[in-house]
Amino acid sequence: MLLKLRAGEKLYINGAVIRVERKATIELLNDATFLLEAHVIQPEEASTPLRQLYFVLQTELMEREGAPMARKVFRAMLADTSEAFGPGAVADGLSGVAALAEAGRAFEALKAIRSLYPLEASLLSDKPRTPAAA
Image (cartoon, rainbow, N blue to C red; front, side, top):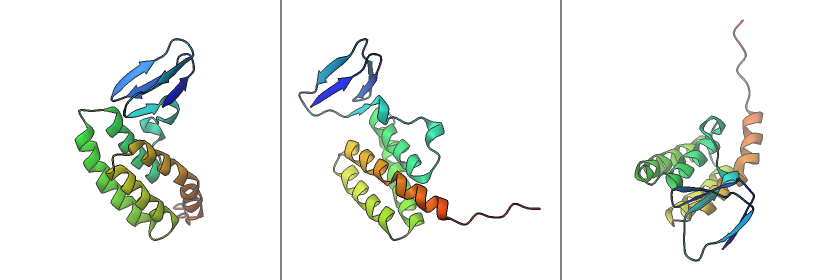
């Protein structure tokens, strides 16, 4: 797999953080768990249920020592999030996310979660708002 990085961009491989000084192309010759900087979200960006789920799975990939705990949290959060959204497209998508994560395909699971963001935004914006107390 070829990864093309811009100058100063970070790459997270098997828990290590790598920053390239100049534009670079890196070829991974074997299986590795990696995240590109553009796919990493910060804690303050985990502001919706799916983004929180994404953040936990991302943490599992990036922090080897905390990975077992992150995996437990991810499984519990995945079940709760799916139940909260109820039957429909988000729950169907989360079922696919679960299968990918259990198969050890976390990068693809993260991509699948990102693909659900627009649907989540639509559903959350349709929720009736509680009137403010007068």
